Figure 1: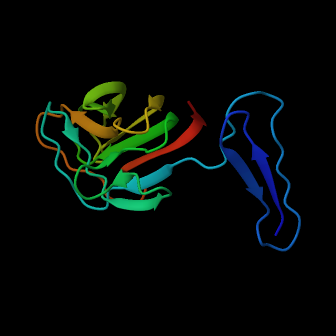
Figure 2: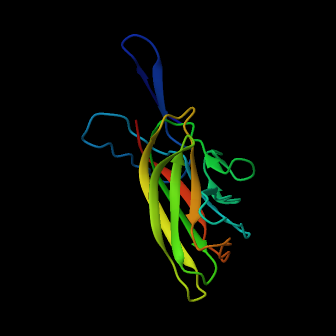
Figure 3: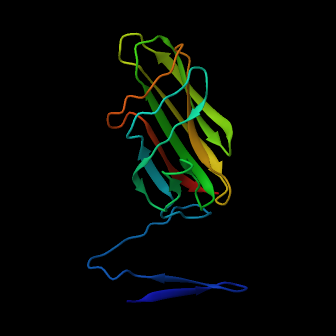
Length: 179
């Protein structure tokens, strides 16, 4: 395996090594200055069991089953939050599907460090199919202490559970560019 070693002007080196694979690999660098990101943290998780949401109370969605977590930054058992260890800008997505046939209004919120960052909202149907709300946002996360969570809210007049079939209650995110 061949390597290319670049030495910095003051200190340090960068080593570029070819992988031990058959075939040819091409790395094309953009015609721009800045940091080149090859892979950043990404995760996707879903809620696999019912969870009760009280009337007019924001409740953290306990998204407990990872589909994938490329850098082990999502906690599916205790805090149900994403805490990336790489500084950058992240696309964060979430949706909640409420069960029930009561009319009302529903919201979903992406919370950053315990406070709301962005809301999505919708109507809960009164035809036994519930209601689904979605939110998405690009958020800067510092790679050390910042974290994001999902919260849901509904005002149907009583408690509501979740529709728990596949893909109904999800939380996902990925790094879209470095800082």
